[in-house]
Image (cartoon, rainbow, N blue to C red; front, side):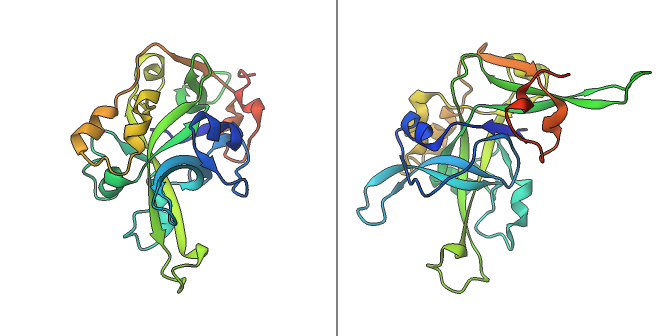
Length: 242
């Protein structure tokens, strides 16, 4: 699974990297410890409401997908990941898979390895930071969904809508697989356009895009156990263990 990641690039940089429009009034601070239910950046393509032209946008969404039919948004905290093997058929994800796909930019992600107790120390979980070897941004394959709050009467009230997302995961490969059996599925840049196109709804063709790019390109290194707490943040989280 992917339960924590880092996303520290400025939105104007992300907008340039993904050739997307961005509204400067929409901001998210850089985070070295993105946790479920946090706001995160997503790249998607949707028709412009005024012109109908397809437009690629960088938008903030909440991590943890809330299906449109959910009775309350609390279910989102349990839907932070969707398995690539079943994402196209699960009721919570299949409609979004067909038409609401996105990219979730990240610097890298964290996984944990249990360390047994010794005579001198208690058992603990050692975090590892996993990122592309060349430090390039990851574009994690994701889905997004809109949830209507029934407590807000007016549909055009911005508070009536919640936009959420989930990260698609796959079997871990190479170095990452030594730490955890699952990992986020990062898309190859050549597949961005097809993945984001909402008119592309062929399930078999879409699933063919969900392959992890060539192996041997991930760096895995132990980092400070400070990242274990969602209350901690900042670049020091990527320091080597003390």
